[in-house]
Image 1: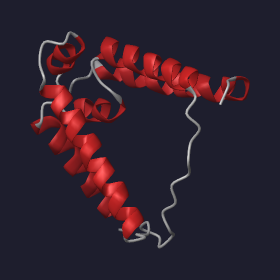
Image 2 (image 1 turned 90 degrees about the horizontal axis):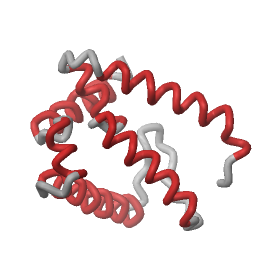
Image 3 (image 1 turned 60 degrees about the vertical axis):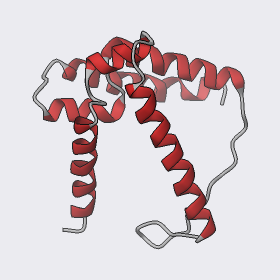
Image 4 (image 1 turned 180 degrees about the vertical axis):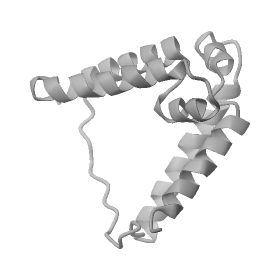
Length: 137
């Protein structure tokens, strides 16, 4: 029964993603073709909301659901790391028409073809786990 809040958060996430049309393959293709502002508006809103949330977490020293302090670790800005990672992520997003979160929302909608993208994501994660130690971090 403890996990109910996470299930409810997932359901809310799915509703927001579907109602905002962020799971729409057509909307994603419009974004990558620079034909519409819709997805850029969603992403920009999420970035602004994230900045506000991080600021509030730091200001009020909020804790996670288990009572542990939330600590933000500084990251080294490595251009090749983010350029390669972002390119691979963007190519996968453009080819499948979905990023990781909406994959499961699409599955919930009954779009069974998305199982191929989910299988690809799981396989990619597995391969990354195999070669992780050999990659520059």
